[in-house]
Length: 468
Image 1 (cartoon, rainbow, N blue to C red):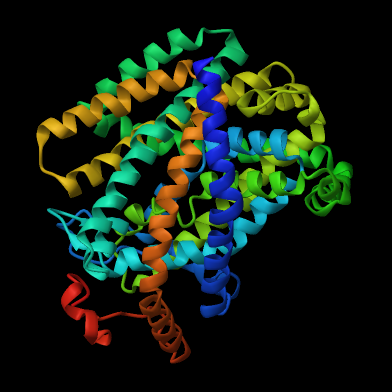
Image 2 (tube, rainbow, N blue to C red):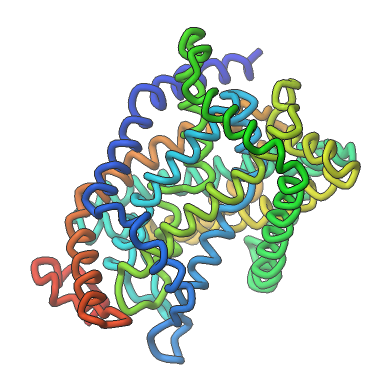
């Protein structure tokens, strides 16, 4: 009964926040950035792809990463639960039309991703042997607002380090139960113990393994999905028509379901691609490039990769199966759809894939939170408490809580975090527009690799630590 009360409260709050406020803010910001950059996410796709071969700049002694490495890391953190479980949840709750709104939020959200990641590069700081940065840094040094920077750091820690880890754990346990019949409680205990072991030591070795295994599994899933779609290519026109009709259909309008379709598609789209949420800039800031715009373009491309490719693969598999009206939800629906297509190997493949995706996300989410905990305080005691909460309490809670509750909590925190970041990047976006103009000017002049120096923005040169 207590769980039902919590769920009703979360649903009421989330519906009000998402329906009447956040969706409008996301769309308005995305459209504003699209117009002001003259459709950078569409006009410069060729440049985005070219930049994947851009090498890291800087001294060999420093452990800088290249644009491609930053792209790979951001895609690895984006591709996972949202692509396999989130898409299924969107279709189960919002219908096939929610996929269309996921595409829309990706198309306009990629402009938002461009702005936030360019800002992360502009205001990045030097660490011991690499760069660090992200929203907390551009809020502090760009807006000169200590309280807002601290608020964002707290919200990001609550969202990724705590709430999102419960979603990852819930998804792993559900997948294992569906594929092997394993108890969520037992799986939760195992995940919690291993996660605690990693965050208190030994992360480097396992992170190195995950950086190889996870991309391979992502490519494997994409190939499997592509094969299934090709095998059912005759159904694709019908699926596309179903998505569009359901997104705008009179049935949804008459029944009052259109709002739910849009809201669910936008929420799950944002959870998957994270555009505007303020997470990817933490990775974008670490790249060593010759111009901030380069990393903005790279991160815009990663949004396309996540939603328009991987999410679409899951959506087509589910819609081809016709099981989206069966009552299944989350990762179980994805497993059922694959079981119909490739037999008993389907649920097992998804269980293994989601374990690798979600567990690596648990570690990645934890370190997002740790980075912001360190931004807030140097207290080792606070960091220890956070480690037990992130890898212990919330991972275990996610294993035993219901699907609706963990997603409800995640949506609430995601909304607060996104609003805080959108306010900051909208205020600072004028510098991004000037950077983009400078980048395009150098390209028109025949400069293959544009270079930025902070004296090009003299009014904020004192706030920029790098880019001499």
